[in-house]
Figure (cartoon, rainbow, N blue to C red):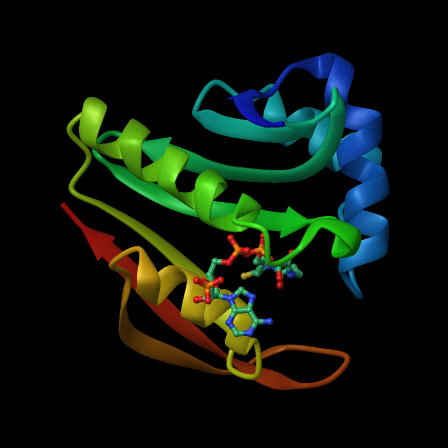
Length: 145
Ligand SMILES: CC(C)(COP(=O)(O)OP(=O)(O)OC[C@H]1O[C@@H](n2cnc3c(N)ncnc32)[C@H](O)[C@@H]1OP(=O)(O)O)[C@@H](O)C(=O)NCCC(=O)NCCS
């Protein structure tokens, strides 16, 4: 059964492995550790039978939140895990009176954009050629509260 819980240091190895399998430019274990332990970081892990199958995190600055990343293990996609993780970020945002949560996404990343739209994020801008390998623009999406 799927469970979402607040990230702990004990999960960092599993998150680093997930990063490696999901992204062209994965975060290193050290960057993850530094970021997750940051005082403004809010990270959640998705667990299936105790195993990390996804994660999502954002940085909260006063009443604004900037998403660092979200990923779900390829073997577990299309089962509502990404939705549950982003919903958890939104629940946190509502609970702590944030004004918005914002993020960047590759313009070709239809699955992620569909997920964000489903949860009320809207397109608010674009960053030309923001990503490399391949070079691609970023779409900026924001959920306002
Ligand atoms: C984006 C990602 C996190 C979605 O995770 P997921 O667990 O598969 O998503 P869910 O099953 O919760 O899907 C929720 C909604 O997202 C959208 N969605 C998810 N995958 C999709 C796909 N392949 N195509 C189109 N829409 C998709 C749909 O609207 C879906 O709702 P539905 O199932 O009722 O149609 C996952 O594909 C992933 O890890 N991708 C690689 C990493 C990445 O791109 N991260 C985002 C960086 S900005």
